[in-house]
Every structure is written in C-alpha cells, then in structure tokens.
Image (cartoon, rainbow, N blue to C red; front, side):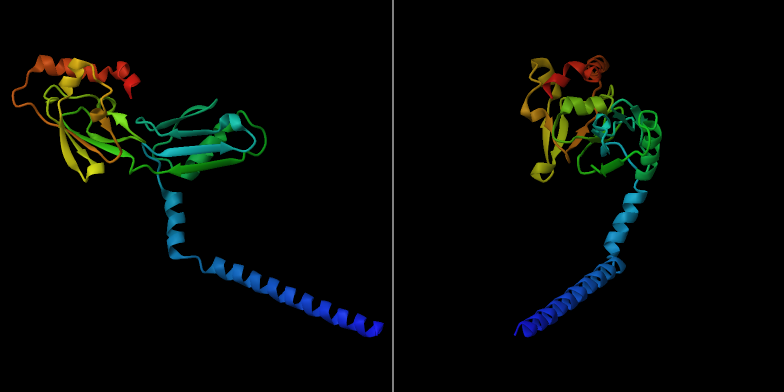
Length: 237
C-alpha cells in the first residue's frame, strides 16, 4: 500500500509539473505574440513622442534618480526656456525629448559622477491656452494652466497698442460655448477692482481687443503703460 501511495504521489507530481511547464510555455508564447502584434496606434504614438518638438506652454517634469535636488516640474516660458534647480536656464523650445535628454545629461554630468538616471515627461498643453488678438503688441496663444487675470494675459501679449479700445474688450468664454462678453477694462483700472471675477480668464477663452473709432493717443498710451507694468497687478491673480 505504501508503494502504491508513493507511486500515485509520483505520478501526481509529474502531471502537475507537466501542466506548469505547459502553462509557462503558453504564457511565453502570449508575451511574444503581444510584442509582435503591437497596435498601429501605439506605434504612431511612440513615433510622435520621439519626434515631437517642445513648445511654449508645455509642461515638463524632470526626475533624476537618487538626486532629488534636481527634480522639477516646470512650464516652458514664452522665451522657450525652463529653469532646472542648480543647473540654471535651458533653452528647450524646438528640441525633441531625446535632444533635451542629451542636453540635460551633459549639464548634469558637471554635478553627478557615473551614470545619470534621468526621466523626462512632457505634457503638451495646447488645450491650456488663451488666444489674444486684435490691437495688442504680440497677438498669439498664451498658456493659462488654471485661470488668470485678463491684465496678466494682456501683459504677456506686450500690452495694448495705442489704437486699442479697452472700453469694449470682447472675451469669448469657452465655458459657455464661446458666447462673447464685453468688458470695459478702463472701468476696473479707474476703480481699482482688479480682483473682480469678471476679469478672470480660463483656458480656451479668446480675447479680442478692438480698434478705437476715434483714437485718443494720450489715454491709450497711458493704459498701455499701466498694463505693461503689470508687476503691481500680479498680486491680484
């Protein structure tokens, strides 16, 4: 009976071993098949990530293995640069992810000996933009991550031109399906109510500064200078 039990146990172990071997072999085949059958959409995503050129407003996260002093989460400035702790400013606009990796590795080699474990994540923020056009110095799209004062956005755009009509500024609110709102900025400048919610701009909004019908140059130049010297308004954002 003991010999029978031992034989039965041996057969059982052999069967279990065979099943496990078959399962491992099948799993290996599944992994291989998955690697071979990579979806075209995934291939395209990898290609786009490798060829994408960094632009103003992109959010970049930099992580250095076991070197937290260099870690940062930053946004590409209007000048096309980012600031990395201890390393300083780096011009990144127009670079691909791999080009940025090489430049960062070169800079970090001045501080870190041996291999540098570098992880870079880039998030395109096209949807986090505000469009400014009309009578401003630099009509363009400007990054707004959450919300910002209209004065700050106009300051980024270089301020209004002398022909700008700041009494009839049109803001197309993306939150309300693009419905326009007319704002008299001179009223807020005169009253000092710069923290009004009406002046808040959100991603996707469009700001249009119309031309004055009868240009009063002195007043327009005064308001332009006030907006350009926006340092006093930033505390209200």
